[in-house]
Length: 293
Length: 344
View 1 (cartoon, rainbow over the protein chains, first blue to last red):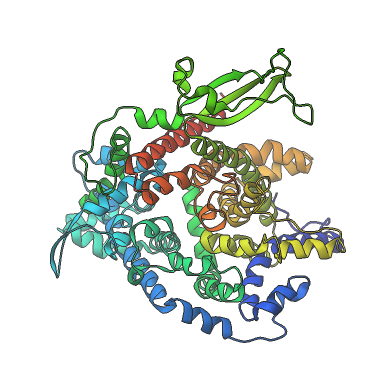
View 2: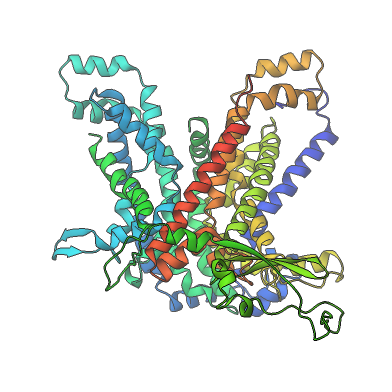
């Protein structure tokens, strides 16, 4: 399928290829372009424009009014803060906990590690949706000791959105696969010199783990930022809600489409910009779930 | 050092998994004044109970079938037959799921104890059976397209992948506007393209198109994900194989059949299983776009599990559905693994 530069790559053929590629690109782009463009239009014009290509062009009465209205309707800033906090903390803790576990599975010798790793990998076939309901019951009854003393119940907190998502089979597995390919002599040499496991992890293995850290971070970021079902169930209080659940403020609005588009753009465009900036890393991280998984 | 990781997985994945199985045999609720009791298979039979019966049309005093204005025979109401009738004790509490006319003088009725769940089951299976092969094939087509050596190809790859990084919740709300029956983008675009001939359709409001519309949107959102996995599979195929095929004078179709496809076998198994697992989890689209309607045409297993387990706080009912979902996912994955196994 590799088209090498051969005589049949004539101008016409090239033109056909680019046309096909571009038409498909339009299919993937038009809803997103429409979303962003519409967020700047008043509702009446937004609706009228859908009948023509104007739907995809920032023309007419362009303003930021929809954004102002969205901020007035819902505490957008709070939702974004919650999402960034939950996502950021979970990604960092996940990288640490999962890489540490993988390090132990690959480089340390202890009884039962093969069995434990097999169990962890087996959890990959359990979709989250099948454990969500019992997990809700568990979360409602878990104890916690915090600044304000002993409590029962994790509902309506940040921790209930963070802690269950720190460790997962896929992330541990990605680290294990990566660590297996590291040169074992490096670790052996360090051990001969009397370095502790912790030092080897921190000084030798982690500095070499850049690519897999990026992969794991991106996957976790996408999962966490886009969380919906879990926070929907465990967070009823507005003050802990993430952005996707915050969308519910806009569900019932059947008329104020401009406002909805403004909110959607606000929570999506930063992610898209980040993706376009780091495009290769994003795609590589998804690809790695395939090759090795 | 593996302890924190394994401990968290044990508490938040493995424990709830077995907990779900245990809860499915009880009548546990999220908050309840009554102690939890073991009730055996009752949750399962309540969900899966089905029965079949045949009913005769109403007859008048001479024994002639009573017909309505259109000439179709009139049947008695099912409920009046079943209720309190010891002959139909096994059908007590069931409702009509679907039925068909067996002949002019009899009607076969399939009953289910939980008609909504049955519809959810059928919709989810339909979704999986249609979306998995279609999406996998489209993703492969895109991967082949994007695997050409052309200037600017990485731009197209980036664009095709773009919807994957957008939340399915955002996509669903956005597409609700695209599918809208009054001023939706799709209706207006189709109308403009056909010079007004197309008069508009309420895609999500019509039971016959709602699930299809959600399928199209779901494929649009996720196909880039699987394109990338296919692509990484394509890139593991050695270029020398293609060179050899070219020297032998193989056509494009032959090259695909004998070089590309055999090299993609493992990728194919993985992609089918991944798509199947994702398709079975269908929830956010339903929650945002249709809430299971119109007329239960978009009910799904996970939507039902959440509606009962969380909405009605019926933890045991939701857990039972979860267990059934897991068994389904496992069965289908095993079948796919078996069908696509290496033939030796």
